[in-house]
Length: 242
Image 1 (cartoon, rainbow, N blue to C red):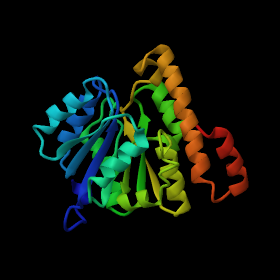
Image 2: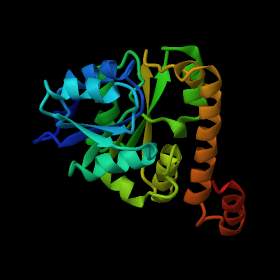
Image 3: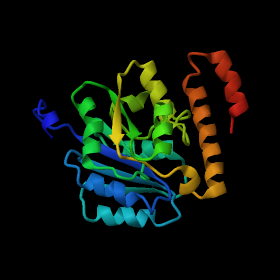
Image 4: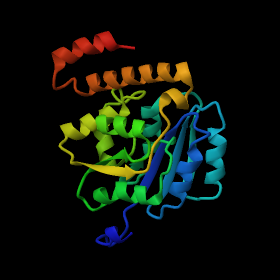
């Protein structure tokens, strides 16, 4: 906590964790957050999981008063899950994390939030480093897609809900931050990784999921940047319409 000593009162921080069918991975993430001393709220939003994700999350929540579980009865997409979590808190600072992370620690949480709390950045982008070569490469090749972020909550006010639908949330958030001239800062997450989708979701299903995910990401970028390039993006929106 030494790096936050310039604050007379510790800022109120909420972690928002959108999750879907992560019964095999979520416990590791929740354990790291349980050990983090800087978090005031930990909001898990289950997006219609059909496995035991909710049961695992509720078990952790029963032993930590900072944790609460919100459930979507049906899958609405990652973006909507994050908006649901945001609506459930008044925290001015947010931590956003995926729930399939491995080797996450409280130090990673602190590293993501410190630049924002110290006003050196409005938003941090956590990129994998030294955990798994596949996820390291994809993380640094496309930093704007990372789901690991610390930020001032007010940034979310500038995101188009339409652009953020499905897996378009990260790119919509990045575009909104750039358009509003919010300062971004990259934070290497040493040792952290997550299973590639093809393995994590199983063979063919993993490839299909990835194809759909990138389709939603492209659509989110098109919608989020429409105001800057209206003619081009109007055409792209038409051909990419789901």
